[in-house]
Length: 240
Image 1 (cartoon, rainbow, N blue to C red):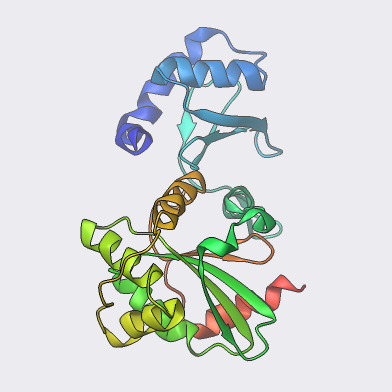
Image 2: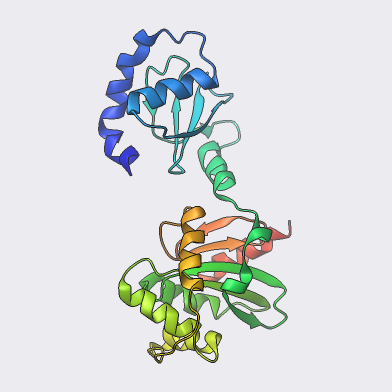
């Protein structure tokens, strides 16, 4: 992402922007100044926050940075409330990365039900992802859970081929488990596997840049591998 590439020079460069005369800036003028400097429409939203007169700038990449009303500097870091010890930036990122769970096309996922299945986890996974294989062993330890696995091949052409074969298997859930848990290569199979492309499009829309990426029923995003104990805790928090 260009934002990461610019980081080493952004702070120094933005100091020179104080001369733009934004002493009475609002969200619109902050957005205009940031995008004017970068040279492209990179800003998703701008909002003033109750900390040091700062403005939160959410980039279209999903990242958060901070600036002042003059856009005379840019802070790439976290805001911590010293009274509550709350990580304001992390809380905001969690909020921004959440989704409307009810809009997910669960018919495009492989469904695994364990026990009552009353708890729900959605996971986007690439069959060749090493951390997905580790996650599979953790998910297998959970009880009373329904896991919806979206095949999301983003690592290699072989990932796409395996995804198609798994989707076209007579028993998709078994084919996925055999591969992810026991390294049993899915047999060659053919069917309408256009769901794989639809999953990739969906994942891109949801800004899923790595696997595994999970979502809970409350829309919260859990990025990366998590052990069973942490997954259990996250599931407990859904009902709170």
